[in-house]
Image 1: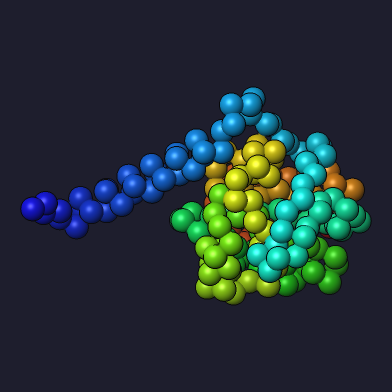
Image 2 (image 1 turned 45 degrees about the vertical axis):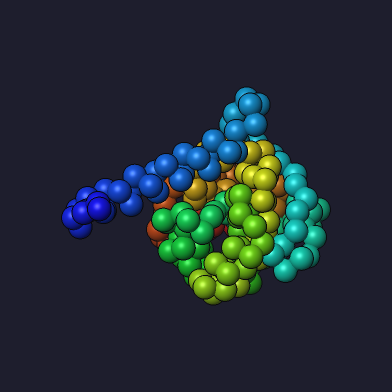
Length: 176
C-alpha cells in the first residue's frame, strides 16, 4: 500500500496537472509549423458551434464589434477565476459594443456546458473539440486571450493568467 504524506500528494497533483497540460498541447500539434499570431495581424477566421448549438462564424457575425477571444479548458487552474474577471469587465463594457467568445480547447459539449453553468458567466462558450481553432490562433498554453478590434485585427494577447485590471486595460485600449 502506498502511503503519501500531504506534501507528497501536493507534488503528485502538481505533476499530474503539468502532465495533463503537456498532453493537451501535444494533442494540439498537427505537425504543421507553429502559428505566431501577434498584434497587428488579422485574427484567423473560423466556424464552429456554441455550446447551445448556435452556429458561429467569425468574423462575419462580429464585423464592426470589438471582441475578446478567450481559449480555455475546465482543467485549467487559472481559467475559472480569469473567466469571472472577464465577465466583470464585459458587464462594464458591453454597452460600448464589446463581445466575448470563450472557446473551449479540446473538450466535449457536456464538459463545456457544465463548466459554464458552474461559473455563471453570460458570454457564449464555443466548441473546439479538435482544437483546430486553437491551433489556427497559435495557442500554446491555457488560458490564452486575444483582443480583436472592430476590423478583425489582433490588438493584444495574453498568454497565461491575468487579473481583472490587466484585462480592463486591454479592453479600454481595444475600445479606443
